Amino acid sequence: MSYTQSVLQPGEKIVLTARLHWIEYWPAILSLVLGVVLLVWERISAFDDVWIMATALVFGALFVMFFVHSWFIRWITEFAVTDRRVISKRGFINRRTNEMNMDKIESVQVDQSILGRVLGYGTVTVKGTGEGLDPIERVASPITFRNAITAK
Image (cartoon, rainbow, N blue to C red; front, side):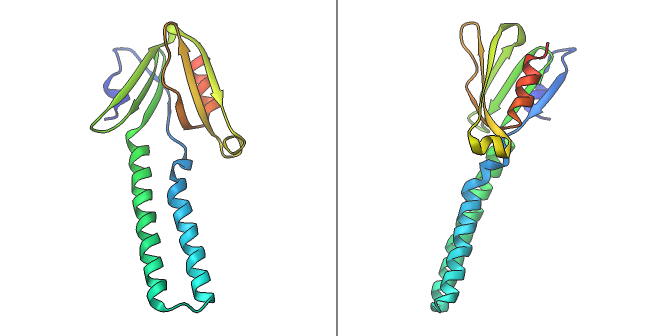
């Protein structure tokens, strides 16, 4: 059972669940691409097989390490909009949760870079009376997330 489902109040319904965008995997993708480029360059330049094997092992290990880390971060992060509140949860052992009731929300801000616009991710900041939620960075489909919050 997800965190969001475990904290629902009686009669409360989930309107939208959001997750981190796949751009979270960029370190793994970068290490894979760099490793492949170096392997091709070493092959063309007729490097010794020991260097080629070392490059493959190093960049293969980096790829696996970055991939597992990014997968874990995506797995333990939850964002949800219910008919009563906005819920944000990060962390596994050291958990950080934020919740804001819909009637306390004053504004919702969406920030997207050019790459974020092209790939469909951005930062959503929910501001309310008193204080707001921490900015939700690299969320997939931030406009849909914002619309779910502001549709009352």
